[in-house]
Image (cartoon, rainbow, N blue to C red; front, side):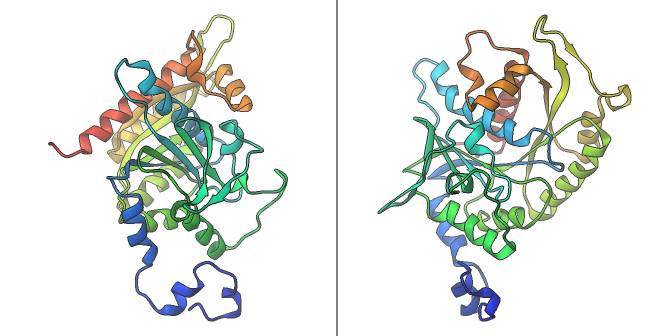
Length: 308
């Protein structure tokens, strides 16, 4: 391992050639991203593409960053979003930092900030053109993902690190699970739409988490209905037999159901503009739904925390 011609240029070449039985970066990241430095590490996952996972991850990051501002006397959360969707990085657009550059300092790569307390890191910030395609095999993807965690200066402390993963269960998911096993992953948040075709792959995602030893913090039912921009009434847009299917799946697989987020035009327009939904004076049904999910998610995280 590490000596074949195909290994040339891979960031993992030296580790593979050394014959080490465990990746030394696991110990490095256990120190750099352990609970004392990063309080909560959450994977945002989906079985299918196109279910709104990255949109939800971005707005969840905005919500966590805004949470402390709404309570007098409470400090703001320090939040980071790491986009490990190497082939389809969308975090820069969704968080409004498209076109900004990652810079190098003595402490490492400097993340881009969508807000004073919201750091973003994505391969999308390193491309010369947004139309560039990364046609990489697994080893190069793995090497880059390591760098996104290991070589970035995340500051002295983070309250939340969200990891936006690509759809499915592939190299990226295995790499993140292995790299962060020493640092500790709080769990995975899985986003789906109500159709059975989407739930088929969500079941696989839950099975992956169980096999990888990752706790499933819960499932979010996204695009559960359409919110009329005129009257704010929410109408189900999927056939009636899918109604309640996500909740039923959660019960059958013994994972928490975190709630529904409707198709809300405000979410779509905010995502395209790369801005937070949580600065609006009059929150829409979609904003209230995301806040409800966040409240339930925080309870899930607290239930895991040790008693002082």
